[in-house]
Image (spheres, rainbow over the protein chains, first blue to last red):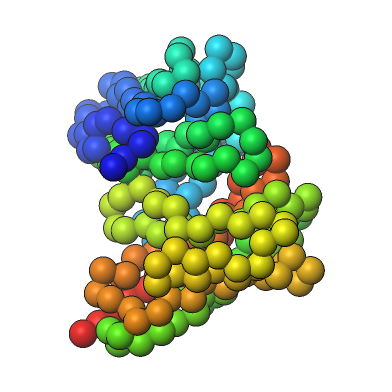
Length: 117
Length: 110
């Protein structure tokens, strides 16, 4: 069964509103979670690394004020897309590392399809 | 520059046939190499993970190989099934960073 739960699986929102996406590790604690964006027929693009209890590390070109990440507990990270625009429409995926080691399993959520109208 | 390249970009095979997907990387230092299967509209699911000292690992009909000297990996799928139709992604880890290949889209036809 799924070890990383992502919610919602899809969401439609109006331009200018904010949307929150949740990523939960179900049966393990994850000090590090990752957020990705995926365009059609392309691979995952890392947006940011979410660290429990500290600020997220954003990749170059990703606006931290637009994509707010909160990792408030060892099992939950949230991504909030603020003031969404149609160009933010995409497939967003999270992942969580089970364990601290470099070779620890990396589990992915099932993604959230965001459509901004 | 750390890069992961996969080939072919797409592949169509008949049900029951075997196929091999390739992954070349320049990531350094190397920690591990992972293969994932991603169905359309879903998150990636782990198939195998290999460290530097491992040169082959199997998971059912999936067998991954790793040549750390040439920085190449392959994923061999045996006796393909319609449900194998998906995107296969090679991910190379270095420390707590992961580099993703662009994926191979596999279509298995009856």
